[in-house]
Length: 133
Image 1: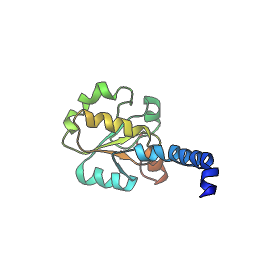
Image 2: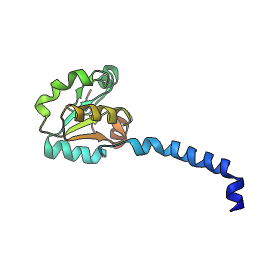
Image 3: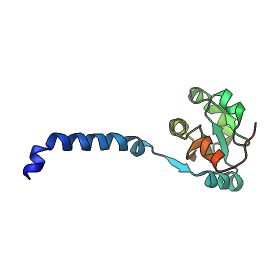
């Protein structure tokens, strides 16, 4: 007990730094799917793909049949996805982190079935799945 009292400052720093490391993982809410699961969604449910990267990255290579709406423009352009309202929408970015914010934007706009590609475009390429250019 004396040790804990003597080292309370160091214990507090350790707990605080551990919490800071876990915070990003704990705040990522929403549905996510691996590249293989996304492939099944595309093939079985005709899921729509929204790529939220900038136009240059999209042109360099993207998932087949993906629609490019950069994340900064998504809030103003959700109407372009109206015809996909009853389908699953897969949101893709480069590494998978920006897509969660875009998915939240879509959910606020009334899209109920929004999924994020876990690991983003990089995970898709690592899995050896096809790209369109």
